[in-house]
Each structure stands twice: as C-alpha cells, then as structure tokens.
Length: 239
Image (cartoon, rainbow, N blue to C red; front, side, top):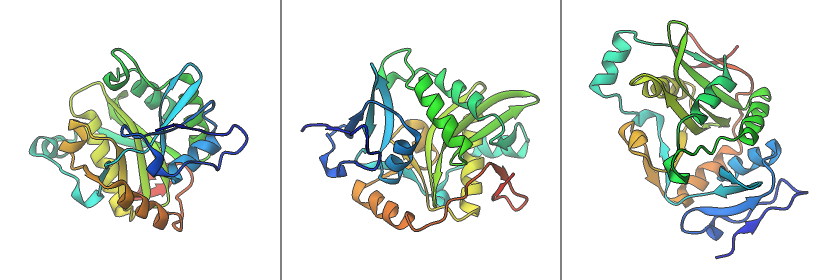
C-alpha cells in the first residue's frame, strides 16, 4: 500500500487511518513542525523516527492505551511509595527529561539507536513552551533518576518516552502521573504500541476504530494548557 506524503504547505492534511500499512506507518513528511505535530496527535498519528530528513508517522492497530482506573500497582511498587523512595515534580526540567529519554537505546529502530533527535527535541520543546507537552521528574535527593514526557490534548495524555537510572524510577513516575490524570478526569493514556513494561502497568490494546471514537469525542474537550504541578488533592493544577 502506498504511503501518503504530507504536503509541505498544509499542516492540516492527513490520510485516513485505514490507509496505514500493517506496521501502522501511514505518512511521511519532510518536517516536524509543531503545528503539524499537534494536528497529527489530534488525528491519532504520531512521529516515530526520522531518517535522512524524513519523518515517519504511525497509527497502529491495535492501539495500546491505559485507562487510568486500570493502572496496576504491584506489591513491589507499593513498597516504593510507602517508603517514599522518590519525590516527584512536573514540568520543571522538560528538556533534561527528554534528553535522558533519548539516551536510552530503542531496539525497535536499530541497536544503540534513539529516535529522539535534535529535531524531535526542538519540536517538543516548542510544544512545552506552548503548554501542551509535559514532563514528569523523579528525584532521589537532587539527582534526576527517572521521568517521562508526552503531550496532553483534551482528556487524553499521549505518552512518548520514559527513562530510569535506578530501578522502579520510571514506573513510579508513570504511576504518579496516571493517578493525577485519573483525579483530573482524563479518559486514557495513549501508550501507542505494546511493550512488556507498559503491559505490566495495565495497558492493553484496543481497536484503532475505538481509539478514533475517543479522539472524536476528545475534540470537544478543553485542554489544560500551561505548566503543570501536582495539586494538593492529587490531581493536576497549573503552576
């Protein structure tokens, strides 16, 4: 099946998801403009990697998501929280989190390879500046030991990547975020594709058509725009 080439002069144009290849690849572009990226997420697509100046957009089927109420907190993780092994913050060092995620090799695109290139960093930094991209930071003392980042539109959080420098740090950060999202009325976390790590936390696959039903409803929801913090009630608030 031919892959759609996105026009350079119109960031609103995307192919129908049914045109995607079996891998989920649906389109290619020559840029990662922030406006195109926001529109892509709103249309159920995300950029996975860059190759020689081309960006590859995906919409997999099934789509792996986590419904916040279904988060799994295993016994070992309950001990992490009970013992207060970490402290958590939101949106305090977005670029540091993203670069730390970029230091983790991604075997799905090649050994010792990351898809978080400088173009990705520049685009998501701009989305952070606009109050749409967010980071979770996990700390031991003054050391950043784990975290994750993603994009928020309406009642959906689109997770992108996470990292951990010590055991359980990324899981603890993810669980902390999901609890806050649930408290704030979010419907789901888009995990994109299956990984054992995410399955262990409660994510599961749903049909792409069902995911797009959520997207259609989500287009009517208000986005919490700005820099986030953890509220006293356990939800999300603006700094």
